[in-house]
Image 1: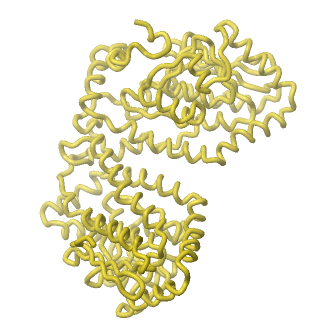
Image 2: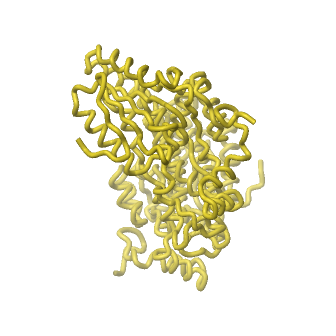
Image 3: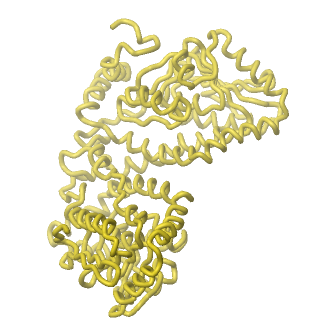
Length: 290
Length: 293
């Protein structure tokens, strides 16, 4: 068994609990964390005792999204009005963002059920990770949002698939936060449970799944996931990946530069305040008050 | 009937001959010409006397492709975009432009309810090759030359090349911008037929007259069976992705590759630009530039 640093891997009750374990960074998805998550899935594939996976986050977040610290093209010393780092060309920047990201699709196509146990903040790519799980159970503390659209980023077609066109656009175009009940209403999650019951609820489901032959489970997963792929989901995700390039590289000086300057001078907290201040109060979630 | 400046519209023999008519610039495609072509096709669509459209170019050449004569703002290096512009502005403009200029017009022609025949002689390059190849039939004169040399200065190809010529043939020419002649175009499936240049239009209108013997509704349905089938197989999706990738391709200016040709352009105009761009590729495998090593 590999030595994990950024996740926890704990077998229990016919399944395994995989915990995104960078609580100091609200479980931001770094490249190394993703690598470990895929190693853990390799291990799950080989282990017949594990009938299903429960995926959760340590601390108060499920995941705050992609780790901005180690993403390509994230350099903040940009030359304006070009919106690129010194010495960089548009060609290079586009190439850095153009990746056929199959990381999350693997979860979708996985041969054993993956149950998302959404314990808190699920932001940006953290929300996508939650939505790519086969079954998603939310604690009443869960918050879903894609606030990164406010500084130039893309949404994921998974929101449209699950929540429908209008609901997905309502939140995808603003980055607005939604709470667990709203997530349930629009179809992002299966169920909302009290925070202290979340993992028990998930593992009760794992145990029920374990009563069914694994081959049957696998085929029934495939009927649902591959059916949606045949209906065009794979094409939609392919286009989604390509559209993520303009979404990330098209930076308007008047909107982006003050954010980058605030971040360079006063850190990420100031950056987020500046970015999200105009959107408060949020329609749902802890920032909806005042 | 609108007053056309950049095209000719001449009804004849059960059809209409639409001629790209900017012979001084080898019928380069600018917005004026493409807009008039939209109008002319719409006019022909509504005219029940017209059973098919023949599209050709004036002065013995089809078209050299997109008119890039206005696109001469100096580039800021190493950024690879126009000086004092920004990536957000350039990217957005190019994406919108590619959608409007190519994608929407491709779909319009592709879904057209009457056959459109391209009558290609002389140069048929870049975006003009896309225009000719997305017509329902393409007849070539023996002097026709197809190619996408614009990819040598940061631009995209069109998936229609792959649909018609197949994966390997399309890549052979779209990765190099190499020219091909009418016979090679026939061999790889880009064109229906090669005819002597002086018989090209006669050949096309003979076909129009034959089509006119078939009921228009039958012609329409059989056009639909072919093109909708390809759409069901994913062609529409391929084109949508194509437009996105083309926008990226147009932003891939690399100092090492593009700076020299742009400086040549500033000193010696478009001619110097093309010479600098194309000299390393000569001799071409086919066509008039194939001779002399």
